[in-house]
Length: 76
Image (cartoon, rainbow, N blue to C red; front, side, top):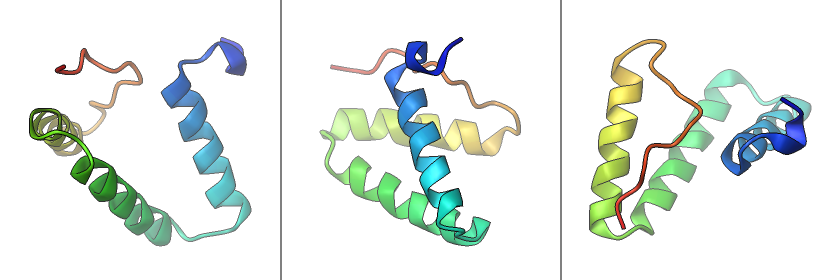
């Protein structure tokens, strides 16, 4: 798949990863910053969507290799 054909969230992730790597941040710094971004973004969502994403993140982080690049249907 050509990069421009990738889903928007994949293109954004690739851009973010490249930026952090180009600035030579350590893996720990990248993870800490990512947690802050996730936390901030979650706090901006309505409570039903926040719960959905917290459950999804919990599942992804609790099972190695469970990450999928396609997003399941979000609650409205």
